[in-house]
Image (cartoon, rainbow, N blue to C red; front, side, top):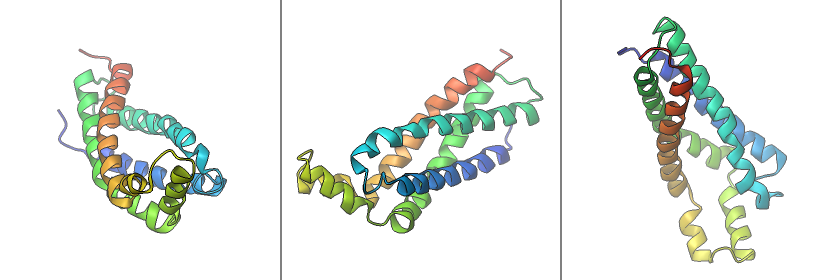
Length: 160
């Protein structure tokens, strides 16, 4: 098993940049203000570029580290490492998103949720804040990353 994780580090940094770019895109098209009602649905589309990045990272690992012969276990370990590094970088990305790219996001979504009676003001403030988003997104990065890594490993494996 390879102890060299430079490919995972490179792709985790790229994934973090993807996350920032996605947030800029959401903000630009109005999902963080004018179309906040649609935010929950469209933000989930991030799964497609996220899956692509995992695929490209593990494919690169297979090609350059495992000489195009990678087992499920090797791919899965690479996916775990990638997920872990992404989760470590995630607080930085969330901080940049909600302090620089879209600093009024939490106020906007809280107002929307309360106005449409989806949540009370107190509950909305507990859920929609930087600390909660950092924690939730880091655990999401780990759990979804583990699953994505496993799925991609099944497709990329070619040795037992």
